Length: 292
Length: 141
Image (cartoon, rainbow over all chains, first blue to last red):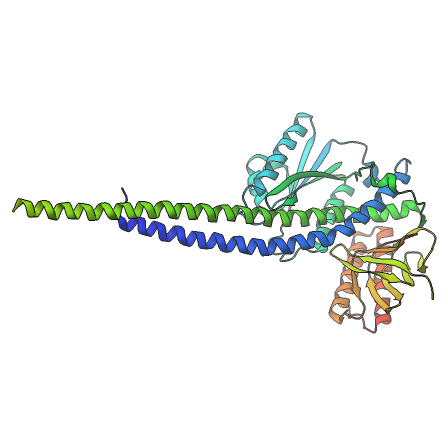
């Protein structure tokens, strides 16, 4: 049985923890709003870009001269996984859910006899993956100094990935990130970026207008594909940032609620033991008086 | 009164403009062009330059770097990698743009891949030329 003093200290410390988690929740809520706005602002560009690219890819894709970024290297032996996680912790299952998806994917690929290489973006995922896959790491992008995600950040990552592709380091690249669905639900998603994959069903089919191209289609495609990689990485980064704040917000909300419950329980316990002490003292006094 | 068409200017980070205009002057990769309502459907890549939008609200200029423009029956959409309203551009921003083009040129020069050097040199020249149009002097490199 802890003493009254211990209980009191315990309650105080849980109270201050609750203050911290509450503050973190509010900060995350503010950041979430900004991240969501950024993600929404970036959506028109990505959508239009993909529509045009899909249309182009559909018309050029079949020919033999299609760029390697679209047609691929003709093999899928070496797989690059670009894994986006957060730079900071305390965001619930955010990082673990991506890491779990990555683990499944890596073991599938290994079972199929493929070579896997990993490029990490964000510190937390790297820490979790280091134990098992440290030998697969080929690089890391540090975004901890970045206050506000810009297109330039995505361009840097894209440049790195494209340089490795040109150097023949891998055949297929896939990005892993958390797609933002709502504050309480983020979906870990794997998306293939090289060779470029489009859902040929919807938008490409709807694209019936015949466009003139200046310069010719292939030159445009060669110019746009690398930008397409950057665009996809950028929207993944934005989604991921929004998801991170959403996950942190609900994690901190839970923590605040748990702290509240704990304080209630501790307070009850504290009052009971205080009452016990008082009763004890009274009994002692009364029995002392009776003995006389 | 000339016909109006829908015009959208979108950068990866946000949508900069969406309005009805009479004509848009686009710095295409193969030369400048002007798009008006009912232009034949066309897709072109951009070179760094000035995008001039004229409409009932007057004329607005934007400095754009690479990207592409899609001209269609329903209007014109410009997807620019980086776009800044020419009136808002400061010497600092412009110098930053020129410097990054310069750095890319140097890098291409060091790597010495024929086409890349030419492309980077052209990019740099385009960036420097923009300065003349908006009344800013390029930085000393």
